[in-house]
Length: 171
Image (cartoon, rainbow, N blue to C red):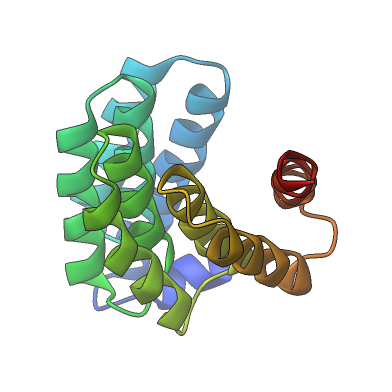
């Protein structure tokens, strides 16, 4: 995402959108440094200036790093309300449900992520759905998901490892 994408989202004053973008960038920098409380506060400031699906999703991601999975899921629901076409929060909800051990509940979220019109990483929900099927012992379905992830992104290292591991295990 860049400033241009951020500025065209939703109604609002351009200066509010620019301020929100600046907070978003600072929040991301803090998040990548592991400064999670500061990142969360800055994402909230971004949302106050100009709410976007990205800011809600990244706030949720920060909460997930803090072990606050229920709060992370809530922020993803807010992201979906802000922009139902943005794929990341659907995938993230599914991933958080996997972390909570709620595998069946995660499946529909990955399917919704796969259908999203706006998603920069469409291979992610395929990998995550494969993880669910693998944990359920549904090996063929898991392999198909990993193959689909690789078809969408041939350099996706996690999908390569998952597929290789599963093939090795079955041989």
